[in-house]
Image 1: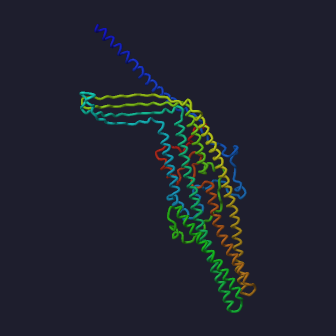
Image 2: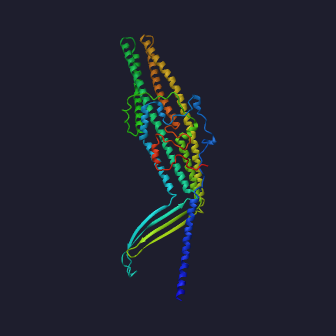
Length: 530
């Protein structure tokens, strides 16, 4: 009888433990299946694979073979020195100022900070594909009431600790598409930094040219003031000798006053340019006044200008490169939204340790929770979100084409401006030479009594006007060349060969610092190519 009871009890225990064992086996099998799926389907990515646009212009129009203005004005179509274009002016002070601006400019530092932010966003996105593990610990102490537990009034403490894990298995690639988008955004931030750098170098050069041009115009004005004072003294001497009328004296005084009145305006413009240059170097206004107080020649453009080919803009212009990377980032967002159409698999686990007071023992508990969630009804929200991302992608594609068109326009316009200003300067140079000869001749004739003083005044006014226009034209010509190089994306250089690679040039250090300890996201396109 006793043996039969023991056998019956054993059968009951076995019957009770079998479901528990089956549950554990099922949990382990499901967890193993999820892990196998995660390992075995790394290439399952929903959403479109990004491919860089081969025809960046509307209606698949190819890039022009040459610049129109370059073929008309005979610019050189060979490789352009865009990386360090400011060296072509052969002005050591300009080179120095650009180097200082690169190190100190606040706009450039903000762009570096934005690179840091984008790099961190890549880390945030990447972290989502790995298990999230939390450690927990707590200690509780207390005593039960004697009315509830007669023998339980002693104080007891329990120390509990453990680990909780949750892992979303990226079966359909929603997380990986998010990483793809973040990496493309990081690359776009690098191109934005370069775009700021291109604009900064151009603005420093243009402001420096303004400084030298205004100094030259002031010098011409002062020389004309000195010449007109001599003419005024001459007319006074002739008036005192009874050789001319008071009208000549009054006209000479008026002419001198008019010329002297132009100097304060030019000096104000010079101050403004110096202050602007100081701000670009992240120094207080007025800092550069003493350093640049000594006048110097306006930087002279080289005899020949190399502008490269239109197709090189796709590699060279940071704004085009940034627009293309933004398009890649947004294309990946379609995949992120599409992943919500499919089930999400996860694996959760818990491991806890409980330690009671002395003599009360301790214990370990654990659990594994494979899971699946599938949003099977959402009233069309997910598909609407996919259409939202597709519409945004189309917008950025059109913006990319528009960016390329505007870049072509800027280059053509800057080439036209430079070529026409060059022709204008040549004519002004000839006119100044002729006007100077006229002033010398009319002064000699006036002293000989062969002409009236009005001709002297007219020739002096013409000379002053032409000299001022020539000095202004010299500044405009140098600035137009600056704007040519800016339109070409000058100030850095991609590596020869593939568009995706970027050379570690003299302006690469801030980018390297931002991308430290990161994968090489600059050497290959983010989206998988078809």
